Length: 484
Image 1 (cartoon, rainbow, N blue to C red):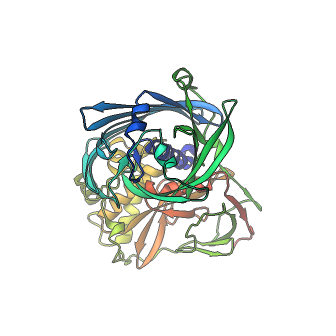
Image 2 (tube, helix red, strand yellow):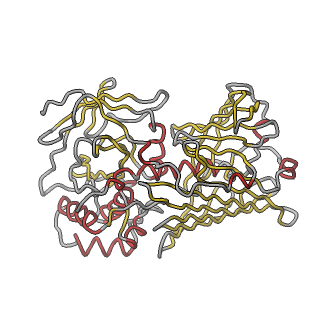
Image 3 (tube, one colour):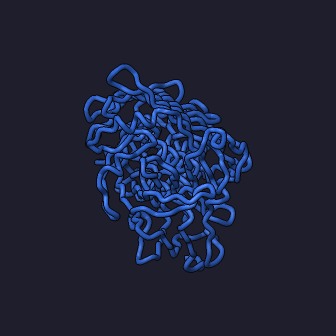
C-alpha cells in the first residue's frame, strides 16, 4: 500500500486545531479569579468579531455574543469558521459553542459542535461544583464521562478586564485551571503580565497590556486594551486572532497558503540512510524553556546528542507487561471496552496464544484496512472503525484500543519521523512486552518503527499539543552517517 505524504504530516494539523481551540476556550472556559464582572458584561453584550490569520492571510473568523437569560444567567454563543489549505486542497472547519453561565460567570452547562470533512464531533456537559459531566458523540456511539477539576470552572467573554483589575505588576503571574471542550480535559495554565507596550495592528499603533499564557510547555501571547478587550492574540502554531469589524473578519480566503509545507524540519549532517542500521545519533537543537523526557526506552540523551537503538523483538513467548493500568484503560477517545472493539479483537486475534502474535496481527489489520487520508478532528478509535479512514493519529488511536482490548499495555507516542528529505510531525504506538516498550507504526507498517522516529511526547491529543513548542524552532543534525 502506497503511503501518502499527507498521512505523515497531518499530526501538525491536529496540534493546530487543538491550539486554535486553546485560543477559543479563553473566550469561554476561563480563569478561576474571584471577581464580579457584571458591569463589564453589560458593556460587552454586543456581537464581536475577530479575524483568524495564517502567515498574514485571513483564513477564518470568530463571532462572539453574550446575552441575558432571565435574571440570574447569561447565554454565550461562539462560532468559529476557517479554511485550512492542506496540500492545496481547501478543508473547511466549523466549531460552535453554546454555554449557560451564572451571573458570576460560572459555567452551568455547554454544548460543543465540531465539523470538518470526514469528521463530526458533538459534546455536551453540565457542571456540579468541581465536576464536569459530559457526553461525547463522534459517530454512531455516545460516550459519557466525568472530569474533576481543581476549582469550579469560570467562563468569560473576549473582554478580560478581570485580569487588569488584579493590580498586576510586570512579571506577576496567575495560575489558572480551565476545562477544554475540544480535548475534554482539564489543565493548569499560568498567565504572566508583561506590562504595557506599543504594537502595530492593522497599520495602527496601540498601547496595549501584554499577557503571556503558558500551558503544556507552549506560550500564547495576548494584547488587551485598557477596557480588557482582546485586540490581538497569537500562538506558536503560526495563527493570529485580530479584533476586527464584521465585514473585515468575514472576508476570508477560501484557499490560503498551504500549511503543511511550513512545518517540515530540514535535516543536516548528511543523508539519512537507515538500511541495515541498528543505531543512529542525532544532534538536537531545542527551543529554550522547553523540557521533553527524551532519555527513555530506546532513546538515550547525552547533552544535545540523542542516540536511538533499534529494538530487537522478543521471542514468541513474550508476555504483556503487568502494572500499567493507564496504558490499558478505556478513554473518551480510545474506547478500549467498546463491544465493536472487543468483537474485532476477538475475530482477528482471539485464537492466538501469545501476546506478540496478537500485536502483529492487530497492527497488520490497522495498516491494511484503514484508508490513509487526512481527517481534521480529534482522533478516536470508534470513528476510525466506522469510517475506515484516517492519518497517523487515527491509526494510533484505533491500534491502541485494539491492543489494550487484547490485554497488551499500549500508549501513543508523538514526535517526528523522516519522509522525502525532511522530518515531519508524526504519531505512532508503543507496546509493553516482557517489561520492555517496543515501537509500532501502523501507518508505515513498521514493528519496530525505524530509527527516524524521534519521540518527544507520550499520550493523547491533550499531551500532543506540547509539540507545538517545537514548531519552527527544532533543528536536527545527523551526527554521523556511518552504519553500525
